[in-house]
Amino acid sequence: MDWGKLPDLAAVALLATAFAAVSRRSQASVSKLWLTGWVMIALHFAALIFMPAPGKLGTIAAFFGLASLTWAGILFMWASVPYRKRASSLWMLVVLLGTNTLYIAIILVDPTPFWALAPAAVLIGVLPLVLALLNVQREKHPLRWTLVALYCALSVFLLVFQHRPDNGLSLALNAMLFTVYFGCCLHFLHAYRRRTAGAFITIAGFLGWAGVFVVAPSMGTILPKLQLESEVWNLPKYIVAVGMILLLLEEQIEHSEYLALHDELTGLPNRRLFHDRLGNALERARRNGTCTALLLVDLDRFKQVNDTQGHHIGDQLLRRVGTVFSDRIRRSDTVARTGGDEFSIILDDPISREDAERVGHTLIELLGAPFELGNQTMSIGASMGIALFPEDATDAEGLCIAADLRMYDSKNKAGQFGKLARLPVSAAFPQSDDQARSRQVG
Image (cartoon, rainbow, N blue to C red):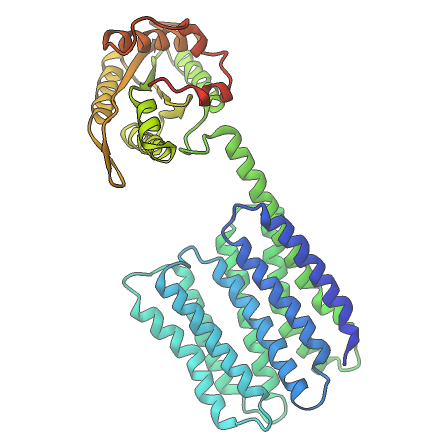
């Protein structure tokens, strides 16, 4: 037994535990796949302990050690594929796992069936190519063809070098592992193009990890007297682990920043971001001598939907309304959810009162049409108040108050209220986000 591998196993186990703790809070869909990959790496180090054992135990340990290292790399690659949930990508995962595992098993059989090496090497390149060609109309992503090119090149390399009498099998095995982890480097380079510490460290770590399978055998040939500790060759693994943890932490920070400025239910800007954009829009209009319009929309029968159909249907309705509004305005404009059933729309310049009223009329008509939510068909209607800068107000607070007054006046004329139960000014600026979310006027 090689008990010298225990420190490496302990280090990877600790990193995997830290990774699990971080990924538990992560919103990233790849976190579970990454964690599975690191469990495979831990299995790799555990198997290395038993590899020196004689007989079948050593062979089985060698198989699981090499296979788990390969499986981990393939999972890391697959996790970075944006279309991984499609059937063709799932089949590609099965093909890569199957062909690589088969080749490792053939190499480790004693005595080695050399007649089986060539068919196995051909399968490594041909099966991914055939699968890609069969799905060429549905999937043309560059990552797919990068992966196919890598494995076709590996297949050719194996056919050329695997039968060399001295080190053919060693070259073949190192080439296969290089292909897996160089593929990880390329996939992460494509998936994480942002310039962050986590992305840089992870990509550099995978490049170093792939380089180990080239540099280590080369040094053994060129400088046979130079002996390096195994920890040197394992260093890229730890670098990748640290980089992945940083990526998850960066994603959590980005998600927290997003939630601070957006409504979690609809994904629209919340009241805080709305006021910030309104201030910027008014400043631009003031500087350019143009107009900015504010539309305040309050759903008429939302409380009734919530009470009769349940909050689940109410949430779906709010998301649908947000989508309808977002699809009907320009990208330069802003739709925000500023209350429980209240939406605010900033129409940036150039805009006129006639333009604003035309947009408002269109949105009211859309909300008056029936909505289909699951098996339910409902129509809710809405009341709207429109205020224009600088005609109705010269600052953000005054514009909100003017739009709020007109919205309640619209409700009053429609018979939604007998009398206003509170001053409309209270809905304009001082209201907090929590108070706004709890407000449901039906």
